[in-house]
Image 1: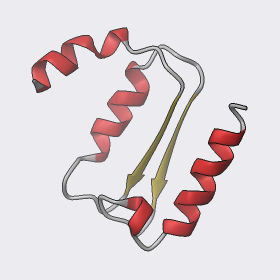
Image 2: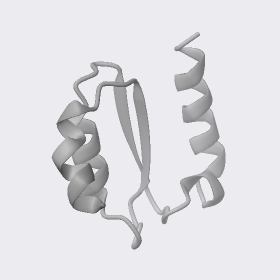
Image 3: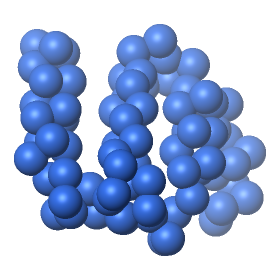
Image 4: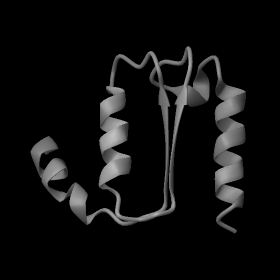
Length: 77
């Protein structure tokens, strides 16, 4: 499955917000960077949260993550 995803990332063309915890031990930040870099769509944003782990929406910066997501979504309306 992972190989299939990597081979087809170049087809990705969607608006995207990627939020990643700096201390995430489940998924490397490089994966988020690759996802953003591979996306052809110009409407993309990556946010790295300091002192957060895998679930930024439930971690130390949950209020900040909610604010960032809300602002990004509102900008699409």
